[in-house]
Image (cartoon, rainbow, N blue to C red; front, side, top):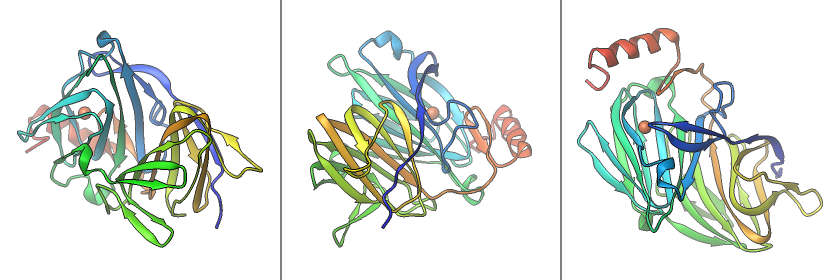
Length: 285
Ligand code: FE2
C-alpha cells in the first residue's frame, strides 16, 4: 500500500464562459493544463444573479462527456434530442456529447444561492463518435456512505472499503471514472483506496483539510485541483471546521488531444471535419 502524496497544485482562475457566467477554472484553464482523462473542471457559484443568469445558451459539443453536479440551486437543460431536465440541488447531469449534441444550460438560484461544478471527461478515439446521450441523476439516486469520520456521496465509480465494494450512481466506462463528494467532520480523518492505475485529484471547496499521514501532512489548497501522486490509498484529515471536497479520478486515455472550444478530438483533421459538420448542420445527424 502506498499513500498518495500531493504532486501538483493547480489553483482555479476566475474567468467567464457562456454568456458571461463567472466561474473558477482549475483543470483546463489552459490547454496544457489537463489531467488525462479530464479536460476541464469548473466551479461556479454566486449569490449575485448577474454573475450567471445569462447562462450557457444553445451551444454544441463533440468528442467527450460533461458531468454537472449542483450543490445549491438548480440548472435547466435542453438539448436537440428533446431532453429537458431540471438538474436539482444535489443532482448530477451526465451528458455524453459523443458525435454531437447541441444544448443549453441555464443556472437558476434557489433561496438566493447557486453553486456547482462541471467536469469534462474525455472519450477515447473509439467512442468519440458514439451517439449522444443524457442522464439526469436525482439526488436520492446518488448512494451515500459513512466511513471513518466522513460522509461520502458516490456519484461515479467503485470504492473497495473493508472488503465491501461501494458502487456509485454511474459505474463502469472505459476510463472508470471515480467521482465522490466527501464531507469530513471537524478534525475528521478518512482513508480510502484509490486504484493505482487512476489519475486522481482532490478539489477542496469548503473548510480546511490536508493529505497524508499524521507525520507528513500536506495542506490542500481551496478552489484548486490538488493533483495526487501515484499510490493506491488516499488519506485525508480535516481542520477544526471540517471540510467538503471532491475526489475525482480516472484511467488515463493516453491519446493525443486536439481541442477547439467545445470540440475535443484526436487530430486537427477531425476538428476541421467537426467544424464542417457543425456548419452544415451534420454535427448531430
Ligand atoms: Fe455545454
